[in-house]
Length: 361
Ligand SMILES: CC(=O)SCCNC(=O)CCNC(=O)[C@H](O)C(C)(C)COP(=O)(O)OP(=O)(O)OC[C@H]1O[C@@H](n2cnc3c(N)ncnc32)[C@H](O)[C@@H]1OP(=O)(O)O
Ligand SMILES: CC(=O)C(=O)O
Ligand SMILES: [Mg+2]
Image 1: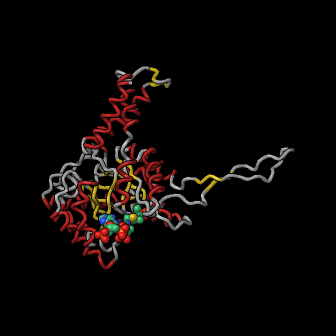
Image 2: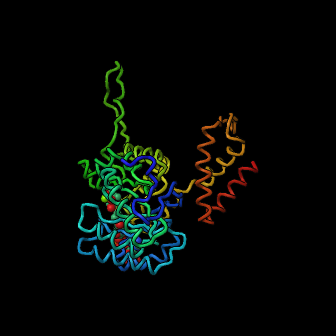
Image 3: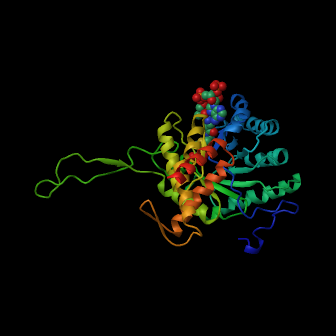
């Protein structure tokens, strides 16, 4: 393990200085596209202003015989498209594949100046991040880059979940972690065949109604579906928050079930995630809606902050006690709203209108 004194030292002579804090840039949706798929790549210029992050995917979902085409397509897209404020990320192939090394050896010199984040799949421990960290530093130095490329890990192996805290803190490059429910299910030998979301058989059942003598009767016993992902998401959120990096829910594979997608995204948002992946254009609007706090919540948060003055003590607002802790929760909501409003004029107007309404009450 590196000494704390060396943690922020560049890992190659001439590499850019690592960031001391992960910059918070809105990333409500990480929109996946296959850069080797001409139809999808053609949509990137019109998608760029609609999404917070565009991700050129090189790993799973790209056929083995199209890996090189996808890599070349990403280089072309990065060069040709004006992304404005939208971030450009890539998901490289997994480190045990024959393509990962060439992915980095090609992308950093060719388009390193345009790449914000490299997503690394199937991360099993800090050693995987250390490998990518050193390699990126060498390549950045060689390419003369002045800004470090950040790293995002996918949590999709049982070993990775067991090591999530050390992964989150493995390098100052760590930007965030996404849940990868499909590979994680396989790695854990879960008996599911879906990409994220719930399962109707994962449930609890109410006790049997008591019969007259107190023994169990025969009446109906309602069941309640449980969340398969609660434990992992909560653990990932804690690891990320403890290390000052950002947690994300990953993909929701049932593209047509927009209702369940929205529910899954909202649970992740409430638990602390800042965004999710969009695999299809229909999921972009869902993520934008879910990962932006509602105007009502923002107006309320701003009201509490105003009433709390320096943030200490206790006050009553509409019958609810507010104190230092609720003040901090409200700051989370209000700060997020400010960051999103700076990028999204429609949202800024909705927040301003709701806040004016709350103040007029
Ligand atoms: C477990 C994991 O690793 S998840 C991450 C890996 N998976 C992915 O990245 C999948 C990305 N998404 C996709 O490949 C596609 O959306 C699919 C295969 C799921 C569905 O694709 P299609 O069957 O073409 O969907 P559909 O017909 O509804 O598409 C409508 C249009 O949107 C386009 N489109 C679909 N997905 C995307 C996308 N992610 N980005 C941009 N455009 C897209 C299609 O090309 C099509 O264009 P057209 O109207 O010009 O023909
Ligand atoms: C996200 C991902 O790669 C997975 O679920 O396997
Ligand atoms: Mg995966």
